[in-house]
Image 1 (tube, rainbow, N blue to C red):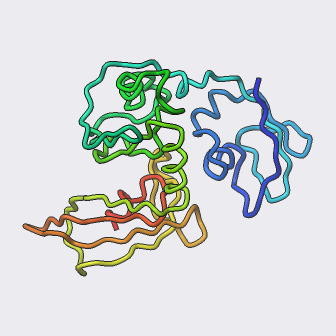
Image 2 (image 1 turned 90 degrees about the horizontal axis):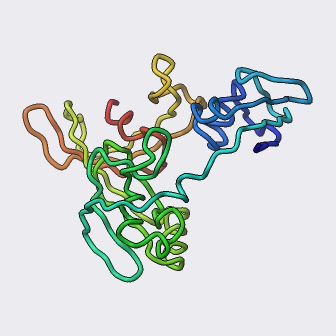
Length: 240
């Protein structure tokens, strides 16, 4: 049995499950619900929907879960290798491939493929992967082949010294050749699996720079550089 304990920080969240999933980012809401046993807030029994405010002290008991991401099995899966040396491997991740094992995708992932290529006993933790792309997004991913490389790459992503550029095709042509989108994102109240723009101060701030690379017949090819890393950020901003 695992236990989470803490005090709600400013500004707090509307309810217990959203605070753990969205503010703390410890578990997805579905994972939290599946593993939830009991909780107290300020010493009193609480439900997942319990409203919270800054200063509330919570204790949450969860069922233990096997860390399947670190216990991934090596699999013989073909990879498109862009570059490889003794420290790093750079891959072109295909659309439809999940990066890390998770609920519903415990095999066939990029991590499984890397362990199969590098050897489970040779690869750093989490198969050396230091960043991710969504399942339906294709693109370049760099993974470490040594502990030293893992720390160096992790520091670059942590300090935001790495520049990430995404290419997207939109059905509308922007009015300007380039610009910046600066909004707040929160879960879409009509579809909790998606995110949408929200009023200032609601959710998390998301910033993306963009420029038009080409356009034809009402479509545009954009180069996008996210300045923040919010879930579904670029998809939401392209809808803007």
